[in-house]
Image (cartoon, rainbow, N blue to C red; front, side, top):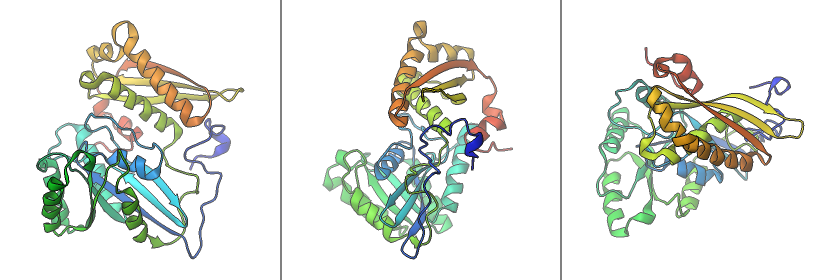
Length: 324
């Protein structure tokens, strides 16, 4: 844990606040729920909806979540710690993809219980979902199944899918929800709370994530890049917060670097006349100001780091481990 006396962010209202004490007593319950799913299953949207605030970035692009992100729900005497993991897919060729898969399955092994999120909209299960089911079966792992995006599917298509998944014998309960509309979330939350073990809370009551502010800010900027650039977005891109200062007036000055692996990618991120990066910066700044409830001065720089995807330090910054 960071020492607040030496923390340059200590004057900022942290989303991971350490001021309040974590409740404990004979009536408190706590537990980790690892959230697994194929890319674009809506895991991050679901975690955000359950927690009640944004803790994980969201975009239509696959593999938006790269590392472990926690969302913490505290209600009455219960605390659920959701662990949002990178989307799992059948084959991983690039080092970053391999590290993301390693982290997802590691979290699956470390959690108290599993929740598999499946996009219910497609007519048939993807190879990625089939792969997850096969591995859970091989390891003898049980999970709660969440069929997400049911607002996009007619009931006559949902029931056959639920029946097929139930036949695997892997799922203790099946829930049909929509992270977008909130349908079914109350029932899912009640089920997860019922399964918590008695014990002290691990985080203070007002804490909704354990992501440091610097990392959360970098993730928000990366999300805005995803949303602004769409298909043009270079996959080999990362964002790091290099400087964070709180001014005498309480405003925050943040300097971030967008690293790309090729020189031509730099032009894509900057856009003609720098329009793309300006729009990204404006969108990220607005969200950061809402998040921290104070003025934010955000400065973005784009640099080429050709071999960053083979640099162990860059992986450490993302909470990942580069395979040797």
